[in-house]
Picture 1 (cartoon, rainbow, N blue to C red):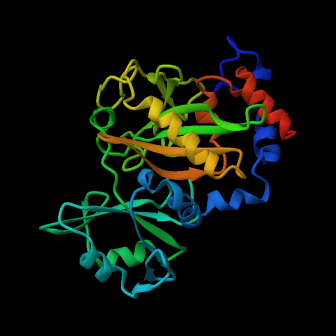
Picture 2 (picture 1 turned 90 degrees about the horizontal axis):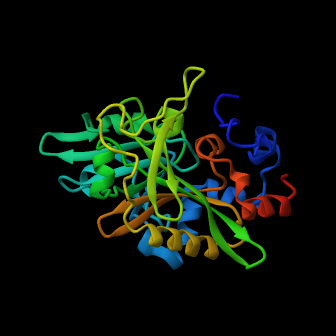
Length: 306
């Protein structure tokens, strides 16, 4: 009850947990497309490769495959040392996962392999991914402003797009900026105690941040709790481009009328590192209720969610 601001908003303006968990199925059976990262990447890369990080490999049952499903190696460690370049990083993500769980970053220096910036051994890689399938992508270097927010994680923008059935086009329904913390690193995820900062959608300016509470009261931060870096008032570069690019991609997968895009702002523009079949409700609505925007209400009513 303490997560949302019922002093300033009507409870009916919030999408509630029953509606979210039981009814929020706007994508229908096609939702599994966005759930599987490799499948979603293949769909989007044909039309929007400029917005996607390099896809190096898929790992299935310990076998390293290229994106065309040709076998590259049966030894993950050897493949990494042969593929990765000095000072380069690779991102290993579960092919079917969420919340930043089991994501790790592999680097290669003169001293050997690192996992999440900690010295490690090549043999450790096989143990880390013994269960389940993974995809391996290039590491996206975030823009200076995001690095200044918190440098030990890639700090992503979660942009939610819905379909406007009156105009027959997608639009940005809401967005927040995730920021890593000492508790969440090397990821920025809310479920791992990362921060969620609100965004002024018109101007692309950060508002105060908060995190999944471990007490009855929310903490609000104008500055980062670990580093003191300024959060509130920071302008997001390329904001208009972020909105247009996510809508372009949403239009290309029009049969998925609801998407949640994870965007990394770079010095040259943006990269979209992941798509999700639906938003994470609490880290979005902690800043403002979803239904204060009438377009969002119409979209959800169209799908019999309200």
